[in-house]
Image (cartoon, rainbow, N blue to C red; front, side, top):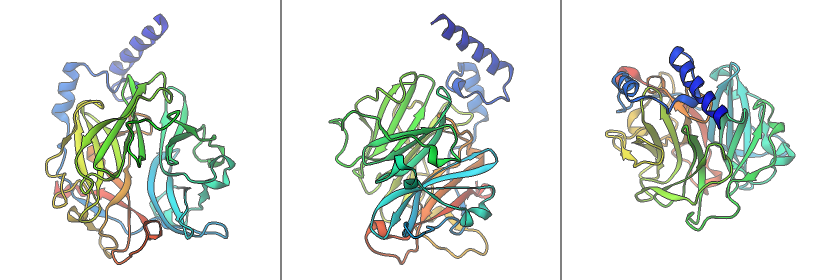
Length: 357
């Protein structure tokens, strides 16, 4: 314990002495004076306007993977390359995960896919991945839906064949979990690791464990936000806002078409408040009513659906920079109809239109 306390003090001292250094574990140790300074410099949260690319990533099939969609992406920029893990659906209505990496978005469409079921540890049903680097373990974690929340680890995300066998976060399904629990998301502050998820029922759920116990010891889920399924559906994600003592949660709404709403809180275990002008179909965080397509791109989707913001850091704090937002999302041809797994989702990229803010 004395060594831990000494390390803790040295870490804070180093962070103060070198303010330009990204020191992940100290992000939630801000003193009241520096917190006020951070918030004084912080950008406004909303309203948002976006520019959308055309489809950048589509389903790439081979003899054993006849794919119809690619969706639910998680994305990091690491070692000068973009790394994407995303859900796939095939013509047999089976779900899995695909991995891609590339240097520039212009190369995304031609990036060679690695189908995750090529890894003997990850055959079968796994989808809706989340990727992050957990600094205390010096390991990459891939969290996914199997239906229950599971995770794998690796030392090298560019080698998807090295992901370990799935491990459950819970020994069994907690009594307080909804009938359908989906779209799992891990984020950490200095003391705890939190697992958020949705249930297609208008509720956002939250579990947590001490950071030194992660990934074991998750508490029984509790309800963090309670609304109705049309306006709080699935695809949730939660971030630490750079330069602010505040967290941002984004949740996909179902109706009248898919769009994202925004909430903020001062603590991960705190009360979530809707962000003004970023909370409705007419004025969303990201939706067809605040997205325009870049010049030369024909509008190809009316849905801004399950995706992920490009982070300022790849670690467990899930930190984003409001001044430099990008959003990798799934969209589809508005004319497409049919069973959900067979809808032709593709991935596109939103970039913040700062000229409109």
